[in-house]
Image (tube, rainbow, N blue to C red; front, top):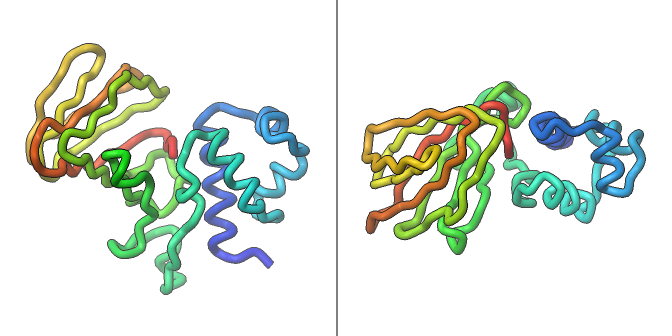
Length: 187
């Protein structure tokens, strides 16, 4: 029988595939699995093994931890509410960036993430995603380069860009906390 966490995993896997513009057949080929199996996983009818989840994480270039949800004790809140103590954490402090998924899942038209950038952390090479992105600096100093232009932002400042190369850095001595919205979801 399919549980709520299984439905969340299935929904997230489908959202990741669609966000990357991949077909079931392309995923099956890359994973060495059948189209039917991938379809069953996306519908929550088959539960992937830990090895399968690692393969999905590698394929989608997301941390394995994304696939492990936290318990939502109140059923009516599942898929609607994310409590502060129940966020899915992505990344590690060693990487200089820890992100918490604020959205209940990846099935909507956007995702919201709380990003904590360690002092001195930076994305050294530009990234270009087929997304529209916006952010609000909740605390700290945050610098973002969008399409070759650097912008220095502080608490209360915000930004938005669409399908442009970007990179970031935290030049401050304190963590920078940014609430980041991405459409469509990429995690």
